[in-house]
Length: 328
Image (cartoon, rainbow, N blue to C red; front, side, top):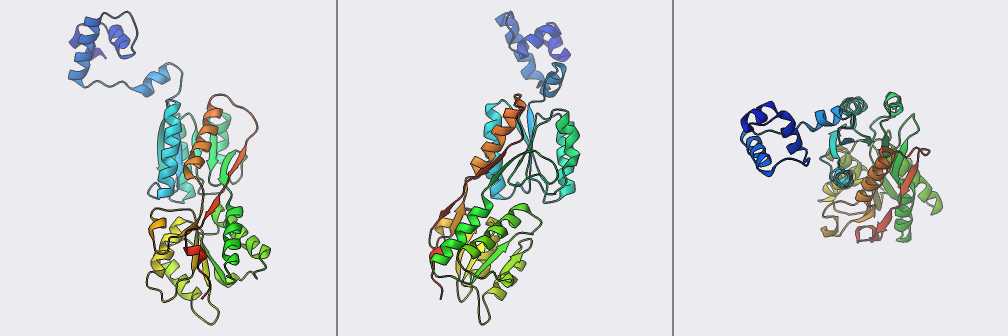
């Protein structure tokens, strides 16, 4: 600001008034200051300005598993839209499903004095957040709950969705239904397994542990599971994919299979409706998940001190063809 003032031939206070759009600056003077700003490439340090005023940095933090996953990209976009409406920007980081990385990111954002934090948790221990929350930083967990603290949480109906998937396949004659999902340490995978078991019980289908595969999805792991599940004297006739990543690996593994089982994916994914047959899914509004979490966070930022809330958003079956294939 001293450089701008010197070049424009005005005081530092006048430069401050111009950049903060304050009144009582002569138009010619303001124009001279703006010309100096343009020439020098001056940019305000918003963080420093806010800290001097005793306010916040105008940012919130968002920690997801992987920003490269389309699910989290859509979630991020929804959060950004809400944040923008409240005059905030979003700092986003990927935990890569690593609890140490999650903690590192959260504490880094706290050190930057973000107004609040949204977390898709990678671990089950979140006691490290208690001092930050007591100091006034609101935290909302989404897609999965916190492990060992009570905090605002926004989830989807994981159990109900998988129950509906099993019931749908049962109505089309399937009794040998496989379930492929992520690592059992992940909350959503565990809840969807609970829904699968409950769906089997409700529809009179014996629960067969050999038809369940819970592990980090890779092309190799899903490919091996498909070979095992679809061969032998009593193979699976239908498969439920526990999330969109599992579904994509499953489709690749089935690309050259002699026999295609019926299939339902928990989570919709891009181009699922254009495949042959189109993939039936248990769908939920990812944008609604991001919006609900962000709106809850900003309610806390604005002073809402009510008891922690748990919001569960609905899911619904989208029947497109792959889940309606009858057993061979």
